[in-house]
Image (cartoon, rainbow, N blue to C red; front, side, top):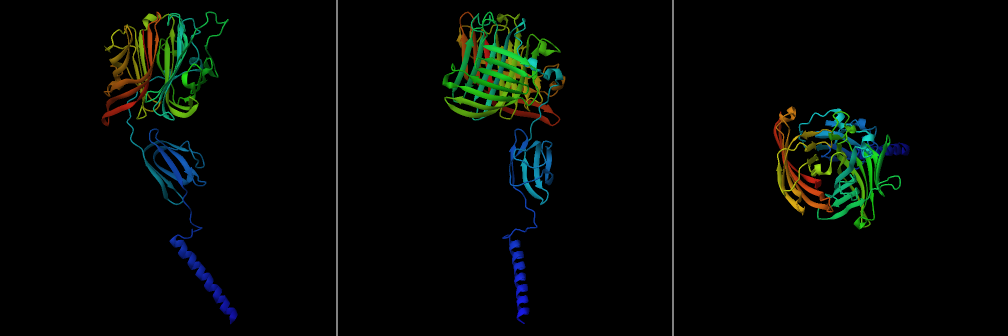
Length: 476
């Protein structure tokens, strides 16, 4: 009798345990061991670059167990979900589900990007070799060459601008003064300015004494040095190191440039083999920049968007023929980049000047860091305000630029593209060479505003443009 009662007690206890587990599982106090858990995965939306980045994953997860709906590119994803994984080319709304449980991990909406009509550009206009990156001034017919890098910083020194140039000038350009120089200017939004120009004489006989600026190249890359400072690398990566006790505030710079897309030749006197031209220039735009800048012993970790330009000019062109130039590399708030340049072959004696014919002007727009380009060849320039830095020497501080396609740009012209830009210098470094040379330069930070319009199958588009640029204006 007792044995039977004990068996009944055991059965009752087991029954109560089962019921309790069932009840507690239902109300959520106990996890069901047979139920699959949904992992925690955090994504960061990068609207400017149209990507989703994995920032956190709670456990081991495989991408085959995840469904990504919407227009995107998942070709870069590996087997497992890892922090730093990127879902590329996202458009519209992207929804992400965990397939084993059907749970929505997140829904992300990307803003619609305006698609600007693009220019037709041949492949030889976008090709640069390691030899192209190296020196050309060793050629007897080339006497001027400079390697120019600029940046607008997003982090670390937000909204600061940096301009760097290693220059090999003709001996007569500065009337036999010091033709090798390193230019470094760092400008902040509140008037901060660091850097300047370091000039050096160039020995007449190079085998007796090496010049301060030296350059070399090979299949492995190129390197340009100016004493302790240098640029080195090979498309698409370069390293720039700036160090000199002649710069105030103990300025030291170490940054890397990465060009996500091919360059564009802005001019060359050769139609096909552009790199063999005696007058030539190419630019990389939309470069990704990161590194460190040290000011007065304080190190700032920085990143931003940059441009790189490499130019060389024949010595048979006299200094008197090149009376000035205006360059501006613009980084806009909407992710676009614009390059503008204009060369002057007549004296610019007026403080303001409107030019209706600019055969040497160039304006290039990219909406995707240089992957595609829109080149507008009909450019009008109005210099609204100038600073008189010497008698008969005026350098602009406010320029209005309007641009549209030429009649020969048939496809672009059909879209009625019209660009209006205001370029206002707000923090610049000035350099004068007075002794017989009468040359002045203004380099630094500028504010960009304006608008662009065009038409296509979807109707008319009007976009406001705002951003920051780096300028280099020269007058002779």
